[in-house]
Image (cartoon, rainbow, N blue to C red; front, top):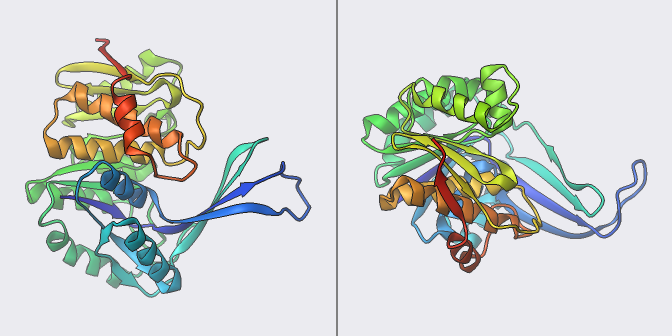
Length: 310
């Protein structure tokens, strides 16, 4: 089993527009798709679509929290959340032909110290049956920046593998506990090292620096150019075939889900990276966030090119 952690869950609302957005006017939405959101829940759906058993956990509250759990039930994703008094946030993704994707992300409600302590108390039991635990995204107000570091220590003490996908201070502190995998993108690398990434060589250098801290796999997502991975065996890049992306939101989360599935299966690094890029590319072909057709990902898996670059 794989457990996904989402501390700042949301109801994700995708608005599909039939005409270009005009500021200061009333805009009619052609269609709406609601999903249980937050990066970790996108990961959970991806793991489920990869064919592995998954358990989603984190913090939810209020009417939106109940709706989020109902949406996960509809998706076939098991869950075990700690319930808080505040209301789970909503996030909006506006999709139109002129601008592509525009996201409006609410910050999340205040979580009390008692509520986060309840989560930490229950966490060892929640992850008991899992071989891999993923931790993704931001945290709501009231949750300290050291939370992923603390959770990573707990997962490793339990003898399990952990994937961390976050940014800023959360990533900086989480790295100190040496998770099995970290998955920054170029922007997150720039934030972490306070420098501008000017090409692939810079990406490779920064990925190696992170790996030298004791992290087995550092995977850097590169958008349409696939992903790069630094590991004990070397540095690899996997490049997908040319596709016409429909919606790139959630591609990184689908990549994390695929990596979690590959770790659970004990796959070797090159195969893991190829699979991660195939699943992320399949996600880009779906109009829904954190969603893909498994048949498409299998087809793309055979088309992704992966090579050692150093």
